[in-house]
Amino acid sequence: MQPATDARPPPAAKRNLSWVIAPLVIFGALVAVFAFALQTGDPSKLPSALIGKPAPATQFAALEGLLEAGRPVPGFSSTELATGAPSVVNFWASWCVPCAEEQPLLVELQKRTGVALYGVNYKDDPVAARRFLGRYGNPFTAVGTDSAGRGAIEWGVYGMPETFVLNGKGEIVFKHVGPISADSMQSKLIPAIDRAKSPATSQSAAP
Image 1: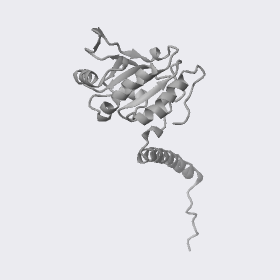
Image 2: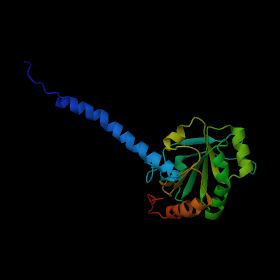
Image 3: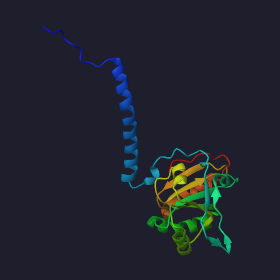
Image 4: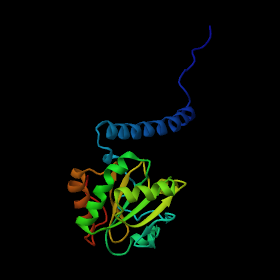
């Protein structure tokens, strides 16, 4: 008669198994958060690890051939976002339909708040990008390009368009995922800009 054997895995095997399961659990939790935000129709609730932190160290070259009053419109770097005044950074593309829908609202936002807007043209054709701004309006102080998409990765951009509000220290205090609507401009963007005008502002309130 064979002696009974213990089918339980040794402690070392249990530890190895936990190292496999833990990342899967974390990944599953993140997927659930993203799915909830998308299914509820409010992608602005997607989390951002950059809130309250300085803008990522990035530099965006000027959009080729873009002129304003006969002068070239410059690109910009993240260091230019820490000038003591709040600013807004908007990622957009001419091939993005929601971007065309929100562009007139960005023009209105700039007029109503006087805030400096910085545009990042994402993976776009320069001719198409210039035509887009000519058609829908150019509210941007500077327009940089992100032809390879590396800047968007650094900023944690999920898709076009996305908009960031920064305080005078160059810290991101608010992030809006998806196109701005008249309602979100009034209830979220403008209040976020007002909060960013406070020198003590280092992170946004909940959206």
